[in-house]
Picture 1 (tube, rainbow, N blue to C red):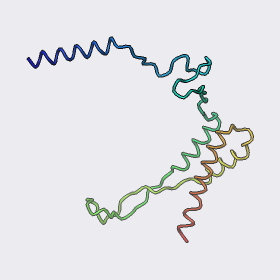
Picture 2 (picture 1 turned 120 degrees about the vertical axis):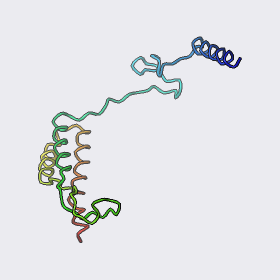
Picture 3 (picture 1 turned 90 degrees about the horizontal axis):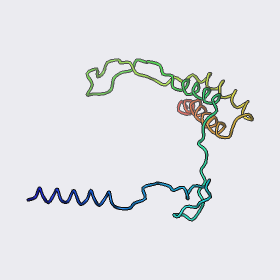
Length: 144
């Protein structure tokens, strides 16, 4: 008996979902600004911005800057983890060792050409200028 009830419930639900009238589209043609429609939800015409993409030349330079900032060197440090098998022994560890000369050279070149860059490229460049400035100044601040 419970099996028949479960089957009948399933059939009723399946029929209900397939026969119900629903609008599954996320946005109808009338809502698109290019068609001149307006959204029923907000009462305003929607406008879509283009995706922001770096120019190829800028993207290649930013990739080189990122690679230079991610350089690490292997150093010997004493293992302080008491649960480790090598506790108290010298072990290899990675330490950040960014190539700041390369970073500064690339960013200075980009800054000199900023008049030819699109606004998004300039904003990405200046974010990396801030990161490189932080990498240069924080070790000095902590050593004082």
